[in-house]
Structure formats: structure tokens, C-alpha cells
Length: 155
Image 1 (cartoon, rainbow, N blue to C red):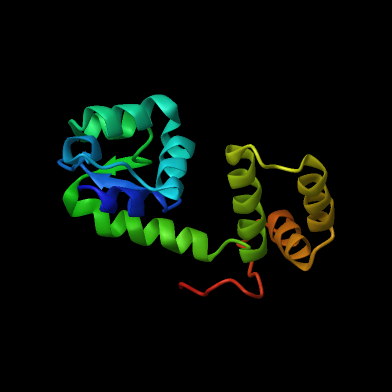
Image 2: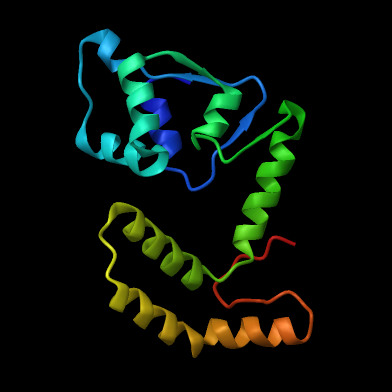
């Protein structure tokens, strides 16, 4: 994976790579800088140290290093990738979309240092009496999978 494709990958919530993947980010070798939103995403996802390593050194990074610096969420065998992607997407499709949206927004705001604790706590309190919470808690108490109104049926 090279250049801008690495930024596209970092925009994903989960990054699953195969055992032989690698990345190469080399704007400094090309004599160029990088745009703000991309730089911010690298720092948010990989920390300053990981971003510096990729941008300034421009070295090819192997799979194990990609996992260690959190570029990848996990690694799997090439022949298991499609099944793993199906599992992850199927699991997400069965979760409460409203909860996923709120959690993702809160986590990203915290990561950016732009979180409003009062707003996050308000969302939490409101979620406790939401229709999705009622569905989820009822399913939990009956030991069955919840069926959220706006979730996708993947069965």
C-alpha cells in the first residue's frame, strides 16, 4: 500500500491486513508535504511517533510493524480475509446503528481532544431510555440476539 491509499485505509474504523502486506509513505522522498486532514488522521490513529516514522523516514513498513503501530487492527491469512471481513461487517450490522453512531462520534471527539464531556454524558443518559436500549436489554435478559429496528438483517 502506498501514499494516499494509506490515508484512505486510516479513515476506516477497522483495518484488517493479510500476513504479507506492507506500506510505504514517502512524501519527504518526493519533496512534498501533506494536507492537514491527512496529517491529523495519521497522528490521531498512530500517535505522533508513528506518524513521524511514516512521513519522515519513508521506509517500507512490514505487517508486524503495521500492527504494532496500530495501522492495522488485526492480521489474518490471505485465504481467511474474506470470511473475517464478513464476520466483522455482519457483527456491526446487528448492532444498534444509533449506538454505533454515538459511540464513534464520542470516541473520535475524545481522540481529537475536542470532546465535550457534558455532551457525551448527556448522550449516555438519553441512550438509557432509548428504544434501542429497551430492545437490547430485553434481548440480554432473554439471552437472545437483539433485533434493532434500523439494523440490517444479515441472516
